[in-house]
Length: 177
Image (cartoon, rainbow, N blue to C red; front, side, top):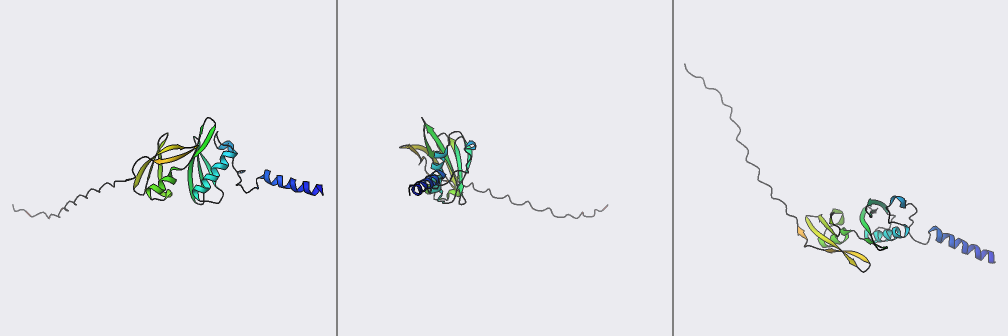
């Protein structure tokens, strides 16, 4: 009887060690190719944040972009996240497009970002542009709108020059001698 009980406990422990406790599996991720600050715990946290942010229940595919930035892809969407560490405490910086999507009334897929400095990003899309500043919120980070959402000015097209009149075919007139 004790042998059967012990075998059930052994099987339960084996499932937990194998990762069958309902969590996503990150066994396919090669951490040696994922930058110096990532480990399995941080990756699991990133996967959880990205799945919620991207509204995707499927397995996400990570891509290391360099400088502790990671692109997570799944369900035909993608997000870019940055791992920021201070004195051994690390937090994930969310994709600025998630915030800009609301402010600009535009799908995140139509938005392009550019890093202006360490804590400021510009977002452009749907004929609008805005600037966001990274702010610490408790132990995490959040993007704060740092400028009014501006409508991009579309340069007026210069009127086309009027076509030059076509030269008329001149027939040489006979001259009298």
